[in-house]
Length: 219
Image (cartoon, rainbow, N blue to C red):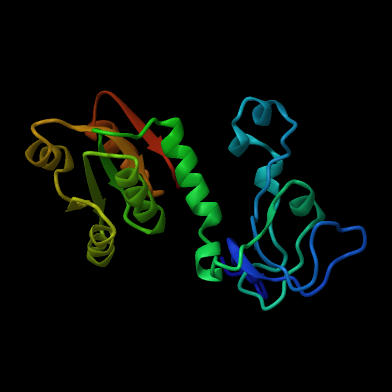
């Protein structure tokens, strides 16, 4: 459904042009990255290290969205460490990746993606590409990727995937063919398609790990 006058956008970087009363640590002219979601750092989930389960994190956002020329940063985003001053060496284009890449780093750290493991990425959009790059940096032996879009598949291969498969192929059989007759040690789901849930379970090796990096929506 369409919403009139709604400006979307998050994961933003830009210049501070006005500072509200009582705000400390920031000044006009600062180049900043701003996270659209922030956890409270106080609830049960935050104290357990599960910040993504925090109720506050799911109820913070920008108004208007990041595609607007000017936006207001809510007080809570400032108080809960959601605004970061960018070093002059960091471009705005690089700065907008701080939040998504941070999520990727956390996911692979929790899943112990590392040296000698094989990784399968389901979904080759921006998140999938970031996962492919980081998995290689962390020492993954092989990185495989799937998607329904040929352009995305070519791009993720440009960014480090060793082998790419169309999502409609028999992915478990492809893994066995290209991965020494083994399934993947780690499967990272970067698509909201519910069918990817079953595909992930069919592609992960015994004792392996599945990372659900996207939310699955049941219609």
